[in-house]
Image (cartoon, rainbow, N blue to C red; front, top):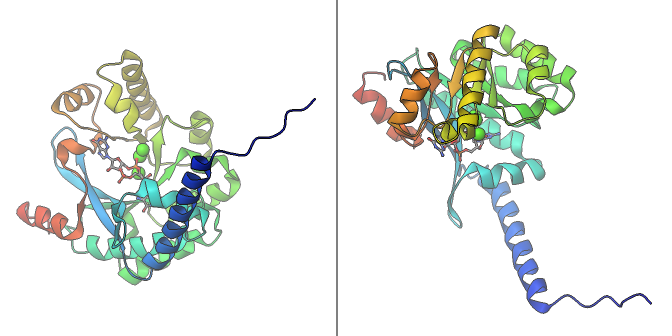
Length: 275
Ligand code: C2E
Ligand code: CA
Ligand code: CA
Ligand code: CA
């Protein structure tokens, strides 16, 4: 005979309810945070690893929530995607970032991360160009970072999008390279300008010879395909040295400092006569 289903223990129901309530509060707070201006851009340096020269910044989103405190993108980006507000949030962040970056030395670039969901919007390129025109920001200074996972969707749509962004002079980078599934096929299909090696490989390359081999191989691949490389996760002087021995890369990581808000970034640049 079939066993009778037992009722779930009380503690389970309680914790589930607490979790659900927390989740609902987060969703509501995220919706309200966009018009309230609580999402703000932080900036992480991107440097020439050979010379240490600052070449630009990657914009990384932060949420200054009055209820939850300072929250990172790994928490709120997936929720914003799920509840359908990622495009609105991203537009607000990019608008702020273009305003900030316009004050920097015009040789400095600005990189922004784009969600796979945004790439499904056939008007995405037009929307981005409109933001550039509004901010009077030269497209040549903008880099758009697309993750490999973006490419698992309709490739023709992404192809058209990438092509029109590139035609405007925007740089397109393949982010988190190595962590996706069909990297090589995608590299052939899409006209990328740059490859970003995921920090998981870089961070492990000293202890783990397989990771080192992967980084070396990506470096060779970039060379062969004529695609420059950015290494993420440059945390230590030893890592910097290992990377320098493999070629000339752009890099970013905690060795150069944690992401900072607009004001701290301005101060940093002012000290270096880059404002
Ligand atoms: P990502 O594009 O791979 O960004 C780099 C992440 O690595 C950042 O985390 C940065 O703080 C962290 N990081 C930088 N240097 C080091 C280092 O030396 N060691 C270690 N362990 N970590 C380092 P963050 O800011 O938490 O961003 C997480 C992810 O959220 C980003 O990963 C990006 O995929 C996404 N993201 C951030 N801002 C946005 C946005 O405006 N839109 C979208 N769609 N995604 C965003
Ligand atoms: Ca990125
Ligand atoms: Ca990345
Ligand atoms: Ca990453």
